[in-house]
Image (cartoon, rainbow, N blue to C red):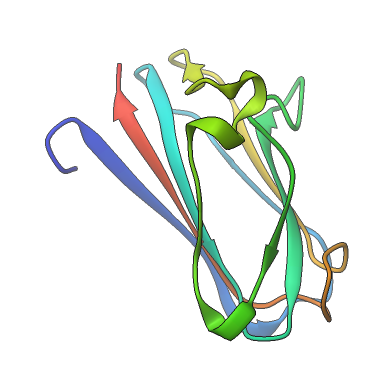
Length: 120
């Protein structure tokens, strides 16, 4: 934790993905999603959704991440559904979904994500 911020890394670094990926978590305290840092290998891409078990794209909907020059993509307030930082109540099941072959390039490889959360 950095002050009241929690950086939650999610990585699939074992080369090219061959199927869609799902990551689920619950936190015992409420958080606000302030940012998402996403990356993949050059010339690959994927589609990212972040939401809940009830609504898989409630927070971040159908964002394509491309590995242009193997750089990161930062999603923030304007990218979130409704243009606001999503508040996630304590105990909510958070769902992160990667569509490995739905982007603009070849199947995603060397995928990494970091959720930037603020407590409260």
